Amino acid sequence: MPMHFYTLDEVCEILAIEKPQAYSLVRSGSLRAIKLGGRGQWRVEEAELRAFVDRAYAETEAEIHAHNSARTAERTR
Image (cartoon, rainbow, N blue to C red; front, top):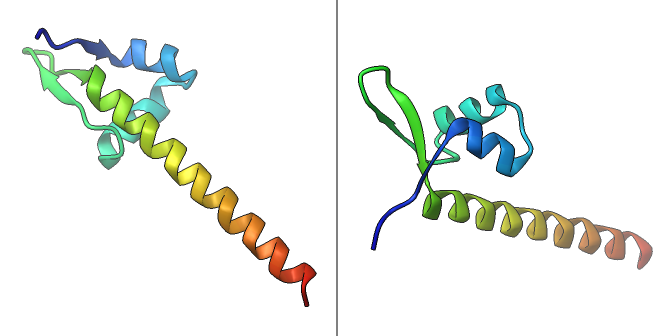
């Protein structure tokens, strides 16, 4: 099965973010990527991008749940 890789420009377009934010995600390890070629251009495998988005959904869901739980606890006081 062939692997599909995105450039950081493509990642920016897909996620609707600016390039500095994409670099920050890669450098922090939040978004796994590899450097290829003599010029060291970043590539993100499609599966890694999907995993990043899945983690972001899970983190957002946990945040919402925590926020809603805190609000419910405040109302019952």
